[in-house]
Length: 133
Image (cartoon, rainbow, N blue to C red; front, top):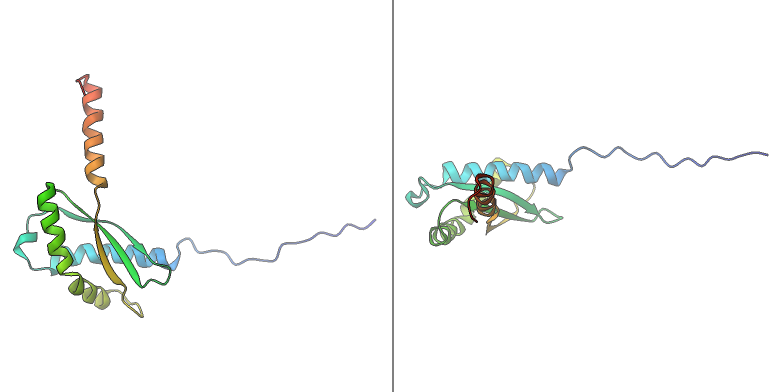
């Protein structure tokens, strides 16, 4: 009796990081730097502004950029309006810094995750100290 072994076709090893992941990380790094150094607006000075994430469309034509601003809600809204007015300048600077055939459209969104994390940490600190919540 003869047994036949079926072997799976050899598959290419997948890279540790996909192209879109490398582009996403490059965009996060560069956009954060552009906001910090290239945007010459006194209203952005002395503000804690962070790029927390970038989501790319499959064809890398759209980049959803999530921004965290450490300030009260009114200041956050004002700063987001200011940043949104600079999306064209940000896109142009990204195009000069990141080597892509087509620079993605930049869409900015306010990210509240750092605020929620800080509030949660404050609650945990109160609980660990035995304070009333």
